[in-house]
Length: 405
Image 1 (cartoon, one colour):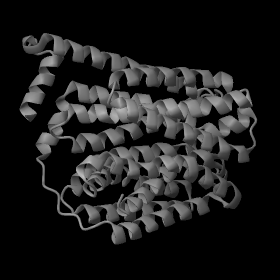
Image 2 (cartoon, one colour):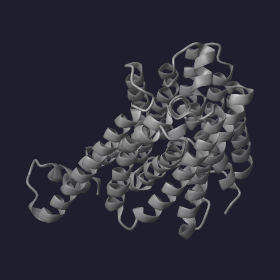
Image 3 (cartoon, one colour):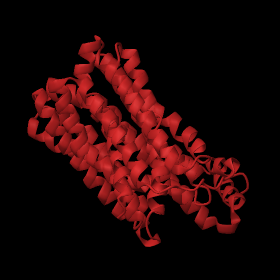
């Protein structure tokens, strides 16, 4: 594999670390700024909403800029946002820094995947893309726990300075190792937008929002839940995050392996299991061993849905996948924002720190319902064949596909 992939993986590692590290540092940030835990949870919500906005916006901009230059610019934005968070004098400034950093997230992964695939022979493209995304998964095993440990012992500002330094390292790596990239061919924006008239694309994105979003009802408030309810010491949260990260890595590998073989059954299993373990956590959170088992299972079943959901969108937008793929990355983070916000509302209403997990279970169950609707619609379309009823969702879907061809 080319060394250029290492530079992309470093960037992915930094992005993955900054996305999730606030979950382990919420009490420290809330105490310094004198805000509540639910208010501090807006750091997760703000970041996720920034990805939602930044993914399509910067993906469109990136289609008109040489890819190497665009990757460097995106990492520059990432560095600026994390540095602003590190020096923030008030909570609002830190929130602004989080949003600035988040704008680079979706476009970096979208453009980076294209660059990674172009660095190797055609039969190695999937491995190259996986190598870049390894940085994201490793961030949840190494970056987030270490960032939490550093923040708890040296101060959370040090954590964000280190993350900004990772961004600088990625810029240097991209500059030195990624070969010059030609200006990408312009694709009609109208063709990219047409994909969103396909009901299956919208259903897939709905599954993305609700399914993976459910994971964040747990991860956003995992620190206060584990310390206040379960009785773990703050230092133990680091190792719980390691377990959560290992579950995510395992789930991602399993989901990726089976997405090509049986995509919809993989979604049925992962979403059903995710809803069950989220519903169980309010019970298992009262026992340290049971909680330590449940948390990595949530990570595993949550991330097992990621590859099939992303592939589902790509399968439904084969003729114009770029914008839809970037928007689906934003959809993951829209779900994250919704989950963190709803979890904060539940806690603010006076319920326990375990209560947001019930919200997550309902979100995952709702995603399962959408998966069943999507499969039913697909079966009906295949069964009707050339006899699709005019004006039906199946007819609209077929018309869209025909227009795109």
